[in-house]
Image 1 (spheres, rainbow, N blue to C red):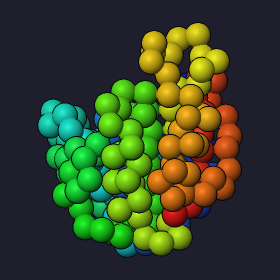
Image 2 (cartoon, rainbow, N blue to C red; image 1 turned 60 degrees about the vertical axis):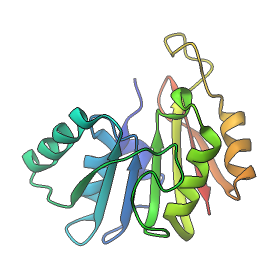
Image 3 (cartoon, rainbow, N blue to C red; image 1 turned 45 degrees about the horizontal axis):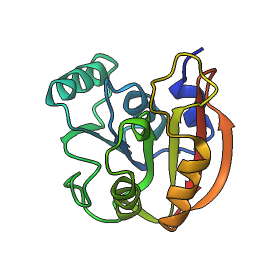
Length: 171
């Protein structure tokens, strides 16, 4: 099975009222599931560089009666590129973007900038054991080194489906 947002977010400690940033939100699978979990008093900021995907995220959330998703056109690989304020988020999701990141160091620093002290980041990406993954895998050990170098502490690692790894870091 491919990476399941509900299962992976269950390991992430999302609770009612939290503010969550989903970087590289894509079609919004994580953003929509996070919005369900944080409830009406919470907020999910779905950040995506591809403008055409923002409308899809907005309509997917609305179709489920979720009005706590804010779509943001921004660049997660540039410090300040998300246009969100510093220390806004309780949680940041980084799913399936490391393998295609051109500036992973800046991405990790943007995650740190967005998180409140004690906040957590969920990193999910392609496993090097996957026979169907992209050619340029960003292995879990490399992701751990990247985030630790940026000031994070690894809290847990887990299999995030048949083809992905999951890491949870604390700021």
